[in-house]
Image 1: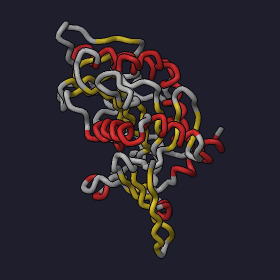
Image 2: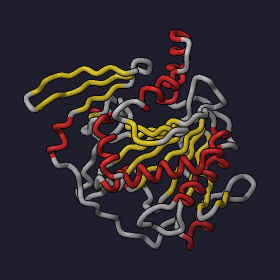
Image 3: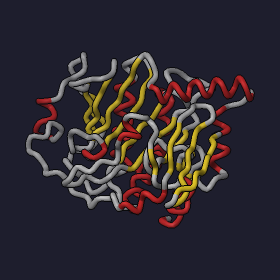
Length: 307
């Protein structure tokens, strides 16, 4: 399902990886970890002016056309004030401005609220989470964002095309082939119905994907508990490796489809730091070809060592 090309350099092996049916590529350079770019976590100062804290959220944030917000557990969901999608919603996950760790209920409730908000729009939906400023969060208070557009995002479109091309050429499901490959690989982490593994051609550092046996957003509700549990296990995995910041996306098809599987992707990000050191540079931003330090095949062993 992917190709690997090794190139010898003075400092070790550089790998070029590419998914056969999507064309997605990355470069893996394990030697770059020796640059010691990891940062000790520095939290930004709390702010009494946070619009997502209890004293402000119901007076500052907007409401849906029915004049209401969506309340599920601790979570509060409302339209994004500055949308960049046809449907764009925000779910504040916790009442607290910062939390030492998340609970499964907090994650599940936030996901349920996101689903409810996105089902109001047609199109291709995704649920997304930037955790901490170094991962792109403009507000420290934990929150998810849902987007939905009439056209799929670039990544979803690649996998929609891959699923159709694979079925046309092979006569079988692309996603069944991926699940079979990952289950028997060193990249496998855990899970059966939702299969979690380090992705072979990662789009970001330490990417982990959980592949669901469904395709559409409306089917996702039935998997809230195992999905939330899996997300928490990956967050804990990252934290045990010294990384607090992360990005998460859950990708869904517009409708039920035999050629697409919904999946959850997480990548670890550099910790917030006083110098604003970034882990995203010209290769990631200008060439759309990320440079990765951690071999996906080593992540299975790293996960098992923790468990």
